[in-house]
Amino acid sequence: MKQLFLLVTLSILCSCSSSKYETIKNSAADYQVIPKPTSLTIQNGQFLLTENTKIIAAASLENEANYLSNLLTEVSNKEIAYTNAGSKKGSITLQIDPTIANEEGYTLVVKYDGITISGKTATGVFYGIQTLSQLIPVDKTLSKLAIPATIIEDSPRYVYRGMHLDVARHFFSTDFVKKYIDILAMHKMNTFHWHLTEDQGWRIEIKKYPKLTSIGANRKETIVGHGNTWNKENVQYDGIPYGGFYTQEEVKDIVAYATERHITIIPEIELPGHSLAAVTAYPELGNTGEQYEVGTRWGVFPEIYSPSEQTFTFLEDVLTEVMALFPSKLIHIGGDEAPKSQWENSKLAQEVIKKEGLKDEHELQSYFIRRIEKFLNSKGRNIIGWDEILEGGLAPNATVMSWRGEKGGIEAAKMKHDVVMTPTKYCYFDFYQTSKKEDEPLAIGGLTTVEDVYSYEPTPKELTAEEGKYVLGAQGNVWTEYMSTPEHVEYMILPRLTALSEVIWSKKEDKNWTNFQERLQHITKIYDAKNYNYAKHSLKSKEK
Image 1 (cartoon, rainbow, N blue to C red):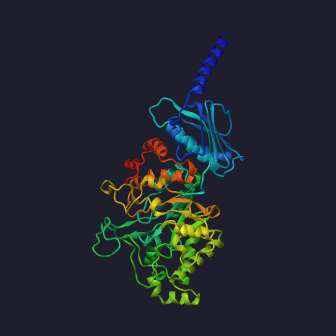
Image 2: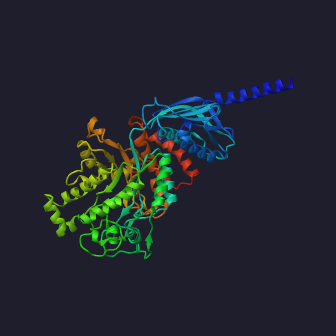
Image 3: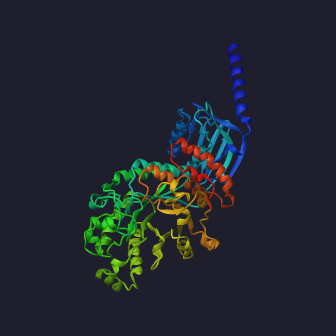
């Protein structure tokens, strides 16, 4: 009788407890998710995260289950373990659902007695986890973590959702690059554009050409402040040697880390311009035979690769090693800001122009890029380049990254080429975030507020519906001439990246600046919990 009484009592207690969390009424304030989901239905009830909560997933989702386990353990201070079997009641279940239409789509169902995250693929499941993480209370003083009940069906608007990081002007540790990738993953970004070579430093180990890092990765000093960036006169330098590069083992580790977070890394190897560091290491790749030094100031340098067979052999060797490290279908070859003066005065360059029946140096650049594209195509890869690659004729399979406004992207889309939009007005996160520049850390100039970013529409109105299909998405760019620390980079991207994430994920008709600002207040609490450095003043409305 005592045993029966105990069982009945426990049953009543459990029923009361379940009933309590089953009937709680939630409000819109409990669902501050960015980017805004396609569909979110408010439900009654809450799921209580406890030490008894388990994560259930098939072996094929072990990566996602372990990621969620680590995330929940961190926010709850409880060990939330993963298992591939067990009761779904009181658990968080991850599963594949082939009926979901979008490859990156997911469904998140939160009930008082369990959570289910379904994805068309493992990528969709991962994005469902990111949404779930934003529904968890941030306040670590709470004795109980209750997640509001909901049904969310979600998928992205664009297939390319990117962020760029320049590590050539200033070098950043592998730990920070991973942190950067984590920030991207949190925002459901799927592409990391890694700018690895520049006039001011070559940052990736190439085993066949060791001087690229022993010489090309190091500059003797760096310009101070804005200085006289565009000229060589009246410039002040800090007198401090600067360098750094990633070994191939470090690159492999970072690529694996990004892959676990469903992020593709697109490496950028600049050509034919922005090549001073490489030409300093190997002068025979240049046009003059002079011995140069790695760039110590910012701006555009006249040095450009010689269009010689020796140069093409060098670049093919470099790209062969790069392709072995990066599985990305796209390889970024730069193509921007390539002055032609050295080619104009080069006997060899003029001979190539004549031999190949080219009109001028612009067509020589197109010839140069087409040669590289043909090589990469032969290896199963395609090129992506800045919109200057349109000049002199666009390579057959190239994707264009439109940065000088939208004109290049529009032109390329009308030519039925894939396009990634990244115009300076909306997507350059090295610009100031407020007109009160005296309150800001040093930046290159310009002004791009959070509201500017949020107002952006990546598919230009000049395109027809059919042409608009060639706009893959958009990307934010982080050029680091004036960002020498991780904290400064974080400050420049947050919360502008947050705004961009909604622009390229959520439905155009769902965008609402006032509502976004309200949700932004919540996500900044997550930034605080993760100790991210962000521009708090930029949460205010756009300055006039």
